[in-house]
Image 1: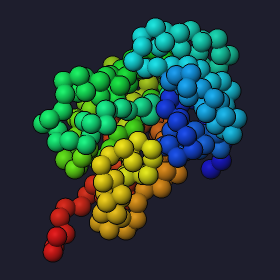
Image 2: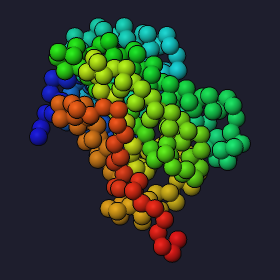
Image 3: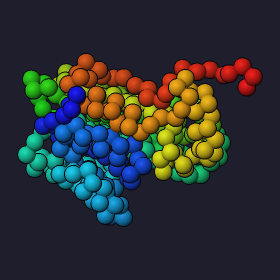
Length: 264
């Protein structure tokens, strides 16, 4: 089924490098015919994202630090200049201080907690508010907002710590936004991706052991392929996902269904 997103415009926030899930999603969107707009957080990242945008044939690259309200306001204004309505938004943004990921959760700082929740969860609210008004009206199909979560939102994953709490808040945020935006036919969903060797995942202490353990336990006996996450995002952004909202869809080779193994 080629060109599932033909004629649609998608904003992808969080493309950092070719190994990020946001890049995989942007690749899949481009493959399916979407017009892409990418964002970068700071001038330090600008050149990297602009280079990636060329590979992805993106239409625009815009600045957006999601922790700064004035930048979100500017993003809305810049998106309004685009000739097309905004059909899909991908929020692939999360952050926690390294020290809050490397020490026991109970020892985390108040400031680190606030920072992780702000960047990883509240930013979805801010992005939705900045973009929902740019989506097609209900009579023309509305739009789709997609974010990225992880199993640590609902299970204790060793060394995931404050990020697990932030992802739990993110998943709850998805449900409340789905309720608020549903009357406008704007769907809001999360993809809970399995462990993938991204730059952010490598920031988790003993992440290589987590990857090995996931591969051994998952029903499919392998780790998650970023392309699988990307194809699920295509489904959610396309007409095929028109009845899905407020959900967390697991794309993790089945790992989330498993309990302890005998002998372990």
